[in-house]
Length: 135
Image (cartoon, rainbow, N blue to C red; front, side, top):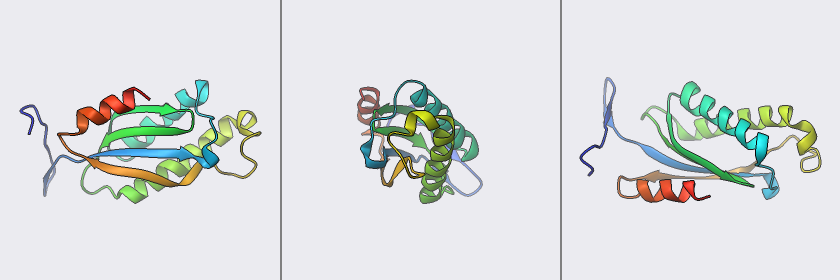
């Protein structure tokens, strides 16, 4: 365990929960770039940090997927957070970048149905941060 490890407390628990989330665009279309990428990062911070009271530690993307390393309190239901994240980002991105996305998406989709999430330990956090930064 790291000496500077921060544990969080609430009324009933002491915790330190970190997760690595990867979400992929529908049909793996390479659309995450430029202004869309910047706006996606803004929306991501708003949803995860503000709406769900979590904390994004690292975030980066490639042209067809996004990686997010975040901390969450124990009461957060990850499946609901991810569902909300994908729904809200999809709706806003499709609305704001309608003309750009028109050749790629003829149906109202942006994200693939699936996603990847795993827990992060104090031993793997630095390795995952490095991996996300080098996307």
